[in-house]
Length: 116
Image (tube, rainbow, N blue to C red; front, side):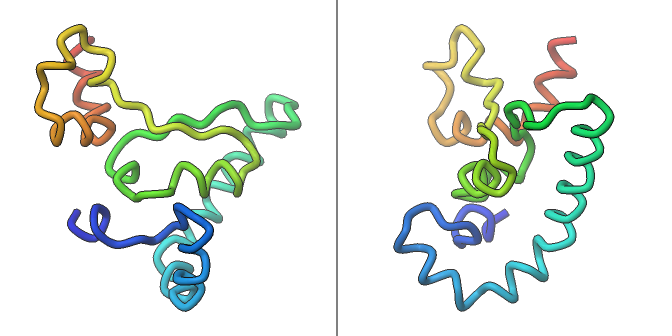
């Protein structure tokens, strides 16, 4: 969890690209299989439903803690990608501690089960 919050894996700005080139092999080892699986899954979706372009991707869970992942996936899959934070949809969200509110996407599954 600390690595997700503190270490950069995906470029957030153009300056980050130069810094992350040296970490390319490490990033490929960590995320390579995952990206290939996502690619296969999304291509299957496109073929099954006969769509040329993916719809918007909404990310939930702990992966949303990776800074820049939404921008990276938007460019990688050529579609818009957003982090879904269910806590923002709660009427009293302004009363929730800011640090907890920022981690809302990690709680999406729990909030969904509670709402059901």
